[in-house]
Length: 153
Image (cartoon, rainbow, N blue to C red; front, side, top):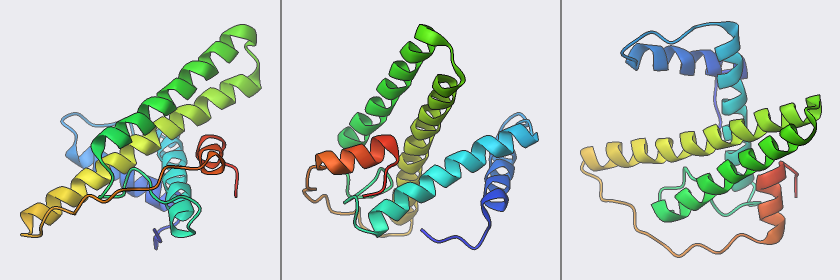
């Protein structure tokens, strides 16, 4: 997924869009922009892995069944729980950073799924048919390692 906006501009745009649609204003501090920037960067990484063929799909892929997307999201939440365990075991900066990274992964997976739902809504409201479900290949151990730990293949 290519964007014409820089990372900071994209995150600022996302924050502005969220504030526009919110009932109550969202804090427009540099902190929230930084958080959205990290999520946008992770979404870009996810899409890049799919575009390069290193992963067959991500949660933004329309043809992926919601049950499969849920399993990916729950797995990421499990990574958060594991990071909390590590943090409680020895409260060091590395573990706190790891927890932050895992929370960004959870948010990015949720955003990807929301993107897919938005695309489906637009496709359906525009008269387009629902995308056909196709059988997706299972992820290899190497692909799982790439998703979980951000390593390049």
